[in-house]
Image (tube, rainbow, N blue to C red; front, top):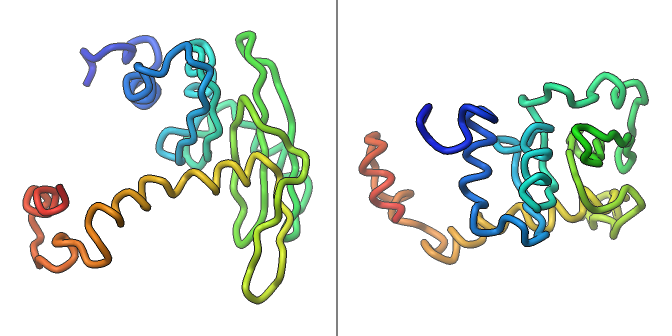
Length: 171
């Protein structure tokens, strides 16, 4: 990994994000990514490569204003946000509470109310456009995997503890 492109400049995770999005650089598209990829560093690197992002942030929260956003207690359907310019790039940090609190870093979208999420027992739950965009597109890979394997994939039926065999069954 240490010899791969962009690792020395950005570190392993951000370098992986940049390599995965290489064909999209300078396109102005939006990258929606889960918490493995989500960080302020990745958001800035993507902007420098001509992409926008909307990412969930969990453990890679260096420079992310968690303490600032945590100052306001949130009820379900509420959010807090702040903006910053870092290395010449405009970033939005958004903390949103639905069933649990989620932290987002975004270079696009808005914190104005989006379409509410419809729940079975509690009715509509308000959410910002940043959360709506993330939640609408983040499940795309799960949908693809379901279509690819059907409701019961071979990897679910074949009882093996070998990660290599499990990976083989899933492809």
